[in-house]
Length: 260
Image (cartoon, one colour):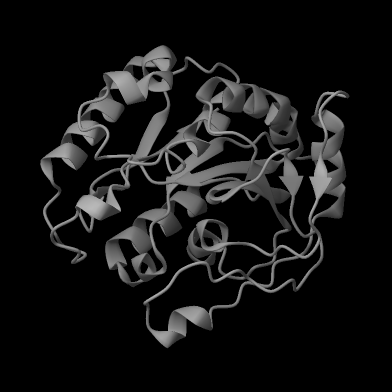
């Protein structure tokens, strides 16, 4: 079977309890249903920063990383035993420049930024999954990383940048799932939607200076950083992406995009 060129995605993944949101589950499940079936999935998550570029476990059954606290016990019993992806790991390493080191971390399983959305999108856990680290938070360098990874899409690999369009957790006054979005979250989200619609990558790169709602929307920027891997993996970083999911959960913006 010949591989289909896959899009690249930026997902607002949320905390583990987001799987209790019937709307998010419906939206994400429908999105996955509209995609061709991937040959493998490559995830860059906000929850793994490590330089130089580090490749996670390529072995089936490596335990998940429950990198969160204060949630009901059932969230620590989630399982997602997807097949390992050693061939994909070798390809990722080969795509990196000769003068850049690539590190292997064979005991690192998927963190919640990777497995939580996949439990909704591909609940059978029957597609090989590989997670790699965020080696930097610099948007331009992450664009270059995405460009390096772009050829994988032609082999049917689904590239997923997993973050959150706003992530000002310290500034949320109402942490309930149905909470109204604070002004800083709504303003940043509207700005991001406008910049996506304009294909304005330069402004997105400069979001810390240009976006309203900063620094409250991203007091730390690791949840917006995976976006730039996704944009870099597109055939044209300035193309207008498809904005597949919007709205808010716990006041945080769920806006998620797809690029070809």
